[in-house]
Image (cartoon, rainbow, N blue to C red; front, side, top):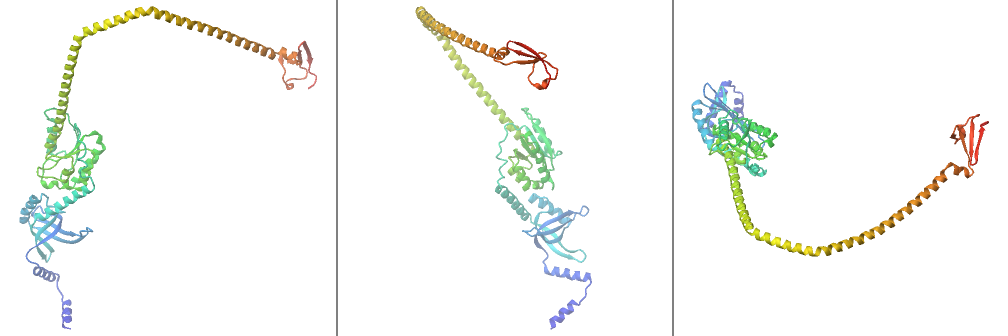
Length: 445
């Protein structure tokens, strides 16, 4: 009964807002030590240009759904921020920016006017570095599981990589160095380059480089290789090249990709999936020149082999001709003697062979003469029978022959009348018989 009375008295106690906030502030001070370490993701990071203070938000998301589950306002005072930011970026190679998971040492505060906030006093780069490594390993694992991690490396490299699609920023110093190195090669190899502009640092790097790759793909038959280069810059700018989407696009691109985007100790996921990874744009140019040198060396070796083989063949042919020249007189004499003996035998045999040949053809001609006479006689008899039949047919088809058989012909105006419809009363007709003609007039139809 007493506790209920106390709770009722407390519920009825009235506070001003300031008094309430002061009580909350006192409760926070009593509940927390001076500092504690907090794991969170940074969001909305911004620096005040005038004061140098950094203001941000700390958030936490559900690991499965990605939904926001906690949020707190944070601040880093200018004196601390001037030391903390370069230290963090040097250790992690990352820009101090939104989206990074951090482990920070904070003091928990509640201000009467500004409410709850966390003041950052220190940061542990190892935690962020571990998260970054975990993300990189996860991307690499995914690319390998999808079977695309080594696809670009498996493409055959062109023997003469002269037609080059270059993806970089047109204002990058590395681009100029790349072009100068190619054009100034001592052997004078011709290289043909085409720039496909893209952003090489900042948040839009990923989508910009992918868009450039899409433009190269439209003219893929016009190029031998693709070069992705950037001219120096902070190590933290390489974060965009640890992108899954960019790596997947490059790994599956149908042309070999050569990268020159980092420094000697930096190795991005894009470098891992590319066909060839070089340190700098200049090193990429030297690599391409080296490939041309290699091809030129192979051609020179082939040329020397051809010359050596030709010399060897000519030497053997020369020896053969010399040997043949020394043996030629003897061979010619032997051949002449054999031909002379053969001609003598032919001279002796020729009269006998000619007589036999003539007798053979005389017999053939006599047989042909007999066959020809028989064929002519048979053909004449056949033609004679045909003429007799034709003559008989003509006689039987003549009008006189028809009249002699008892028929007559009726004519009007010299034309044979075939139908009665063609006659009119009064027409004069001529009726022809075998032994004469009779004239008549049509009196009735």
